[in-house]
Length: 186
Image (cartoon, rainbow, N blue to C red; front, side, top):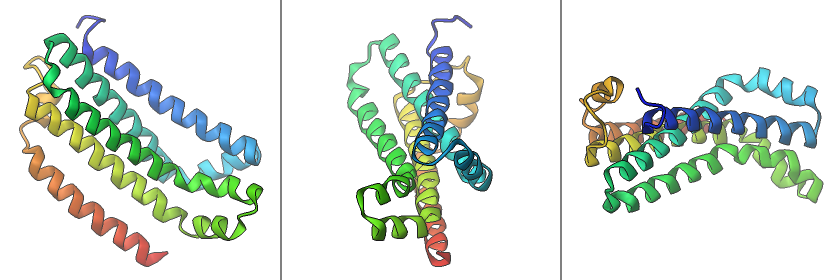
C-alpha cells in the first residue's frame, strides 16, 4: 500500500483526531480542577470516554478517506454530501462534550445549570456515543452511495455488503431507544 493513499492518511488523521480529543479532555479537566480529578473522571467514565474518543477518531478518519478518495477521483459532486456529514460529526462531538460544560459553569455563577448538566451527564455521554454511531454510519453510507471503496480495501468491501440505508435506519431507532432508556434512569 502506498504511503500517499487515502487509506493511510485517513488512518493517521483518525488516530490524530482521537488523540487530540483525549488530550483536550485532560487539559480541560486538569485546568478546571486538577490532573488528579481528570484521572478520577477517566477511571469513573472510561466506558463512555473510550467509545466517544474512538468514535470521533473513526469519523475523522472516514471524513479524510472520503475527501482523499474524492480528490483522487476528481469527483467534485460529492463534496456537498461530505460537508453535510462533516457537520453531523461536528454536532455529534458538540453533543458528546456538553457534559464538560459542567466543569466551567460554576466559575460563571451558573450553579443551577451546572447542577442540571452534572445530573444529566450520563445522558449527554449516551447522546454523544449514539451520535457518533449515527455519524459513522452516515459516512459509510456516503462511501457506499458514491462507490468510494476499491476492491483492494477488504475491510470496506466487507462493510459495504450491508445496505447502509437500512443500517442507518436501525441505528437511529436503536439510538433513540438507548437514549430513552438512559433518560428514564437519570
